[in-house]
Length: 179
Figure 1 (cartoon, rainbow, N blue to C red):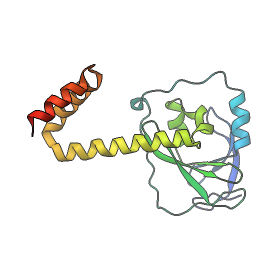
Figure 2: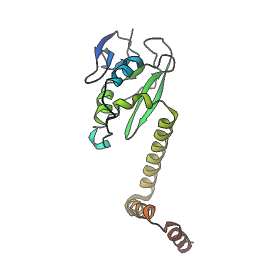
Figure 3: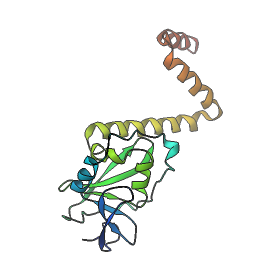
Figure 4: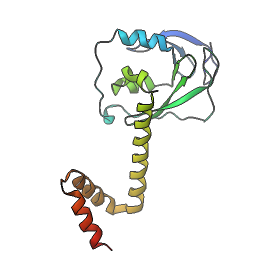
């Protein structure tokens, strides 16, 4: 069985405070068979609460864009967004459900309390949420670039307005004043 990144041989090991997996000594990535993950998860007590993004030490390993193949069945791996303030993607085999974790990704998921949610990350609900989160982040970034110094005031106003019980009337007033 070979690494999907650099084709080095994988060796059986345990991920730190996690399930049994196969590790690449060259790139330090992990191949996690879904059955091993589920067996490990069954032994965990309860759901670990998610930590705020600041607690994770954000990790975004560079990707060269090349397709990766499943070490078990050689089919192409599909990338899935993690979301929840984490910018990297996880690679999963659509046939055997195995998961490739690049170096440091397990540690980041663990610090954020998301390591016990991996089985949910590939579902449509999680992916829809991750895509919406990314759209909001890009939109915020675009407005910040366009508005420059005024962005802070606009954001503060928007946050205040979002919680206001008469926001529709306030928006109508503002709209009437700026025509």
